[in-house]
Image (cartoon, rainbow, N blue to C red; front, side):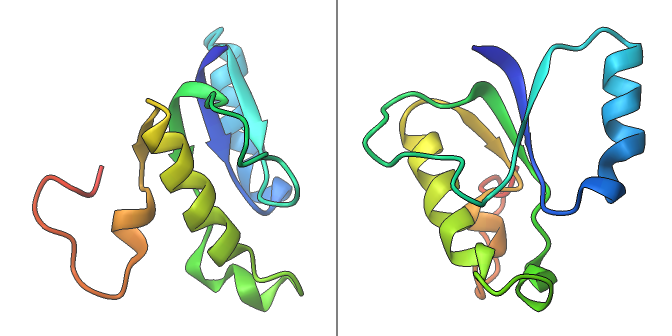
Length: 101
């Protein structure tokens, strides 16, 4: 298990981030919302999951990845991963202070 997983939707947007992580020797995994996870698996892809799925992603995909992403992030949080920019940050009601990390 790596220390960091980056959940993203558009590969071209993340070339600079991935290059910077590689240049600094950070071991990370790349995750996309299209079939990446198994709800029966009780392990997260990394100790820290950084969500970069845009709320406008439904405009670029027929699959509407937002719903699957929210379920995925909540599942990984419950398995012990620290989720940054997770499901509580994306709900329509404002998150309580401290919930949105």
